[in-house]
Image (cartoon, rainbow, N blue to C red):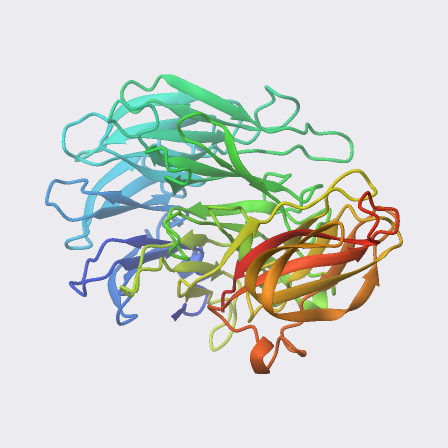
Length: 539
């Protein structure tokens, strides 16, 4: 599904919201703070018809910038229908740009309440807004939000009463409702402070707070501080609930560290961490598959839906400075989808040009919108221009299979270690950007990647042949570099992967391994093999 904006809309944010039009499937919440001359707009769009159900616009007098942030709240007003909210940082309830959070009825699309920012210049709702569940047990959904300044405010349904304030370091906090992580049956929430210096200059941190009383549960920190040549990790610049990824019964969360704070390019490629909500342990850490100094990988993150129906929620990452290996002629800015189960990249797309980069606007792992059991996922291209200049575009992708599972134990080679095979890039036939890597191999020796129809476990050379059935070569033998790394692309548009019995199609499962020469190997057979991967390919 594609939803196009109108002239000057700059569609920027997207989320899913439980069914509001009676179609039986969840609908879409989209917004743009730049629409209508920065009045801003928020729309509820039917996932079934693509038609607008409700539209809300900001004040023409104040240039509200309504829709700078959006959130699905749950039942805020007690009518048993999910409500929604949007930030309007340009509104003037308590002085210029004090900002406000406007809560809307999911039943009527009308305003329930305005929650004003505390003072001029606070810009309430500019950078963070999230539904956090019912933290005080009164039966109404609650919310947390921040502005430009150094604190986050928690407000209660149904009237927006202030419950508590969380102060923090410097500016631009992020926030996410992450469910119950401490076992007291009350939902908790996380706040990102990207400019925190506890672990070094601008390393950033994420703080998990108790929904019950606002007390600290734990903190996690960025790793690399700022220097003359690096802006600092800025962990917590983006933040999202991730669902229960590790299966322990508690909600988890994903946090971005893009190596910078704003839309300007950072000095590092960035990274994203998926954390256990219960313990704060890192489940996965991922980086861009096209390393560069200005990727801003992690500028946007989203999690929570099971896109490949493996029973584990998956997550998305936006990187507005990511550039393909072929250079800017092939794209600018990217959005990637990762498996929550393994951390492997399942899918990736680049934007078309620097004025329309992917990863700058919203990314969202949605709910299942079409009833097929797969969660959908989406991105916004806020700079897209087509029939209307700078209209913006929302693109919703159908959930699809995709998984990478490691199996088979490799034997040590002459380096003293066993070789390991990895995918580098999305396991997507349509993207056609998948590379295979194996290491450590003996430097300067030939190797070859193979794929097959079945798994196996057959002693072969100094190792184990882990693939069987019909076996196919990928390209021609290549030489491991001086570091013992062997790399090759998997060309989906060339034989044998593009046609015939070896054709790799979306939804198909194949088994991949690396064979390589090892004249000095411990077994004396002159060759060895890596471990293996079972790969379920996406469209």
